Image (cartoon, rainbow, N blue to C red; front, side, top):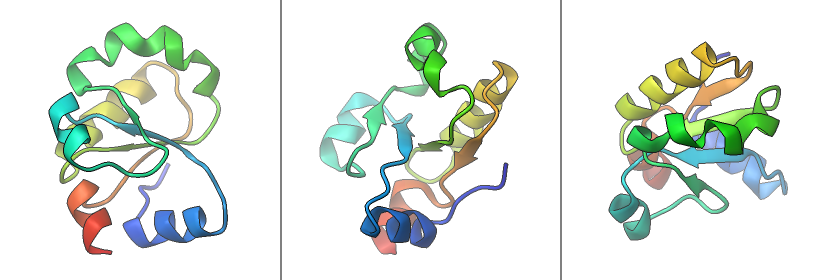
Length: 99
């Protein structure tokens, strides 16, 4: 699945869409700034949270971190676990805030 840009995500949010967004930054980072509607699951805890995400396996899931590195790892991990529509937010939170 192709990655998603901050502009595309913001446009979708403005039209009332509520995509499943997972913030894989550490909790303290998510407390400083967050994308509305996002769920914080730090990358290191993602494997133990898989059962909670089971219903999202065939739905679009957008992952993000600060700049895109950790979320690229999260996308690869989730895809290996059978998630079929995982997209990484290009530029992460920094890109989202700048858009």
